[in-house]
Length: 297
Image 1 (cartoon, rainbow, N blue to C red):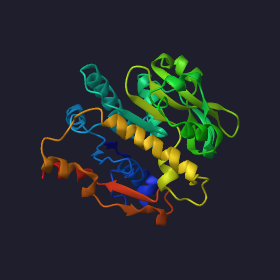
Image 2: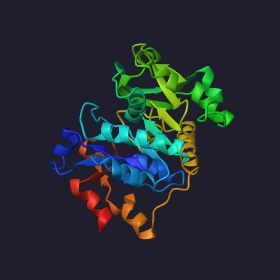
Image 3: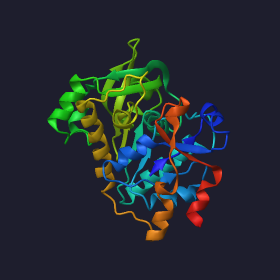
């Protein structure tokens, strides 16, 4: 599953303010390219909805974007419910992975800190970087089985694309009591030298966070942005997609019927070529508020 999020006023204004939520198509392709199918997970629902859908999908990806953590009944609240349910599922024997990318990475550290804000402003809005691995990376679930050439590329080549206005640091995580709950795997510096965390995983659950955007290496083409598209950049992006889908295969969750599954898949919704309207995604799935009604036809 991929969590939807609120449509920004700027984007919605270009489409007659008719949409409630969206998923950038690059995230859908990211998972499909690793052998998964995608179910959109709606924001603004009751806990019972998330419990139900999480019993049917095999993992959840929290995408990047610009949702505001101060907004209620949206991306933040849905993410917090998903986080709590996934922890309960794991304790009851169901291996349920979560991966957060960019804003989703920030959401992971935020909910781990029990929704205490700890991000700081930084300048990494168009910045391809190599990774500075910590000692913990070698024993991490995310990297311990990675091919040597993937690790070497991540260490030496600027193949992780950063586009974020906020950063998470070890110091801030320590302040909010979350540092001991997350294993910091890689760090970096923004254009002004501000340090920040690039990759984490939970110490107790199959939850993973990347501050950078692997999906953009594969599927986003913006000439004004320095997105790496070379062979090495594609290889490392595919590694992260394959890793997460492999994690999702570790549980046997399934829909109750083929028809229930068919009604829930992303294939029910059209994709829009949004780059033509000066929007930062090549393609986007937009959803109206009544999109959830498809699940009950």
